[in-house]
Length: 369
Ligand SMILES: C[S@@+](CC[C@H](N)C(=O)[O-])C[C@H]1O[C@@H](n2cnc3c(N)ncnc32)[C@H](O)[C@@H]1O
Image 1 (cartoon, rainbow, N blue to C red):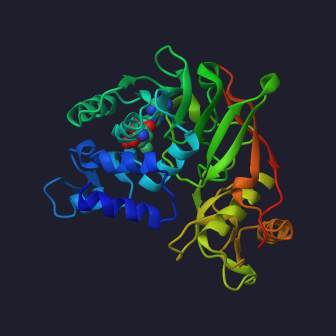
Image 2: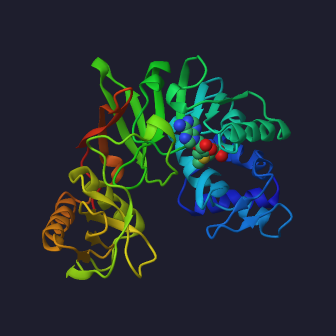
Image 3: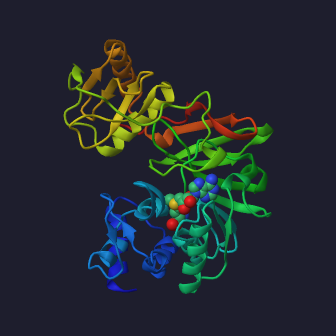
């Protein structure tokens, strides 16, 4: 393995992900640069081309590579490697397994799965994206991957799959995926929750019961079509607060919650309250979670140190709810997001229904603080 890819593996591990030997081997073997032959876009919309000095160092970093924009909105990318590794790990891929991927993108994730011995079908709703993924796989000399253009809602071409991995954010699980899943199979899928897309490992249970275990936090671009239909339990769209906010509850934690604990609180708040979403707050770089009112631009935002910043006519009421949610989470021993099980029920567009999160249950005693 060359130096760049060894350094790449080190970075993924340094960002907290343990790589199983087969996963590490795949990341070490597949040339990621072959899957971004036209370069990628940085966060400020600048294009980085293969000839640019920063091209290879960025390709072999733990960063998402945005490969297609519509206006300034990313519509295709190679996802963050540490997130891909966590999702592949949750998939439990073994050589010979039939895997369906929804969201071919660059083809890089499909290449990793094929390198681990899976037989992969990957679908993308954008024909030009699917074509480029097909060409990249051929250039990289990776066999065992079929690339199709289709809306992933339909699950693409006929076939049964041992595993399904969804690499685009959805509001719920397509019933077609459940129909195509072999007994004992699992669907690893980022499902909208409180303005983000935490990854669930979803299984078919007895008597039409469909449940998901939370795997990890994630942010994904949203899927096109019925996979992102609104439903009665949808949290509000991510938002940016308008105007100034007042500090309505003082600092609660010193030191402040670290990034993972804050995500755990965010998840719990979203499970307990349907007005929780991701919000940008004026003069704060990081987005946070907030309870937002019907205008979408006011409510109460909770910071990692427990302070609440609020605005709008219901500022006081939303602050009281935010504080109660934080207290409840703390009193339960700060349950991690992995402790939640999600029940998925029919919802979305009646003409193209999906299984959406409906119930949340804490499954085990949380780890001691
Ligand atoms: C984050 S990228 C996927 C990354 C990819 N797995 C890789 O390794 O590069 C998300 C992809 O999902 C595709 N997509 C969006 N909505 C879709 C849908 N309804 N069905 C299939 N693909 C979809 C987008 O066109 C985009 O290419």
